[in-house]
Amino acid sequence: MMRKIILLAAAILTLGLAGCNTFAGAGKDIERGGEVVQDAARDVQKKL
Image (cartoon, rainbow, N blue to C red; front, side, top):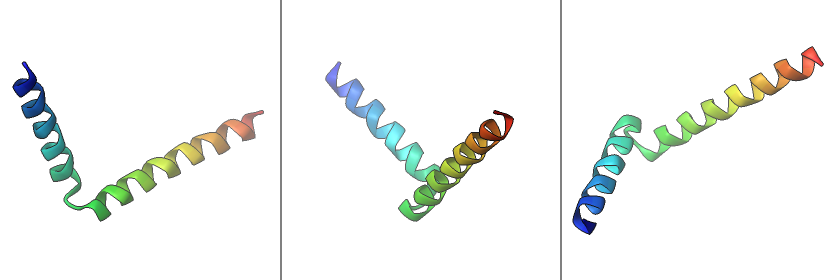
């Protein structure tokens, strides 16, 4: 059971890193996500 969990975690990590290509790419992805949240918050504030 523990071996399956470790293999699953390794597979998820590998896919996650492959999707971003590099840690710099991951940082850019996270930054874009933050910008989307900020834009949504501004839109909500404008409606109030």
